[in-house]
Length: 365
Image (tube, rainbow, N blue to C red):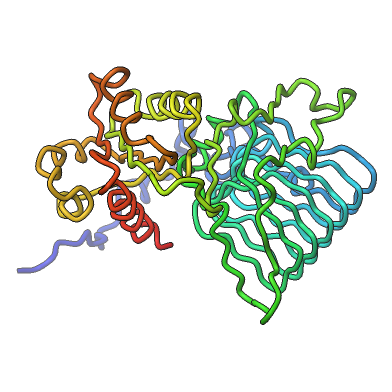
């Protein structure tokens, strides 16, 4: 087969022989046309970004930050600030904090990493996917971190569970792709341990955020943000994490995906804590049919169809009599909701271990 091409004719066209001028009234002119709008490309339509809007540098003795809607998932930088109160009430991509001294910092949900470097005397509230410090001294952190927090060449580090609320915070967690139930705040990895010394510890259980990080000054631009540090209003559930358990009896309570899964989990927390029981840890993970037998053992067959609807939310609750109390709550409050509850206190600890060991493996912890 061949290809067809257009071949220029050798014959002289009649137009060339005809020297009569041709009207160009309707012709389209070549070259620049001042009446024609310049062509628009997608990148031309993007809003111009001023880097100064996404950094705080060299500030001293001031209250500063960003209001909701000002970052919208962009990167942010804080550096060389001293004696400042800094409030970032928005979600962001990553945040780096360098060479800051004696500052109080609140960071809304961060989709990627929060990295403190060469900082000293910092008190902060942070929610992020990854948390790291390097060459830092004396930090007190109320943390929500989806992965294992890492400290490196850092000393005097103290950690507590995230406790914070402002009206847009739940939406910011969603925009940042973070689950309020995946919080490894107490599972710290020290990349540079020193023999015979402890570079980090947990804050006292009764520690209140406002004792460390003040609310925004009523005269500042942040006075309109209605914040709360009451643990019962915190977007992230308050857990005891790696602290010693008061009781040898724990219970596993699992909600399968549904329209009100998050609200149901919150309601359960309110119910059990009102009865004096303690929330140890929570996780939100996806499961496959092959995971069910290993985690739920004899109950796996009845539950397998429910994991196709989405991630499950699991809670470990602790206290003498907690298993019986949870079974009663499941029957009285969540009778129309698909749940798994430990059946008896003799096997409940194994239920807890089976699920959370699986969840930690899934999340790479």
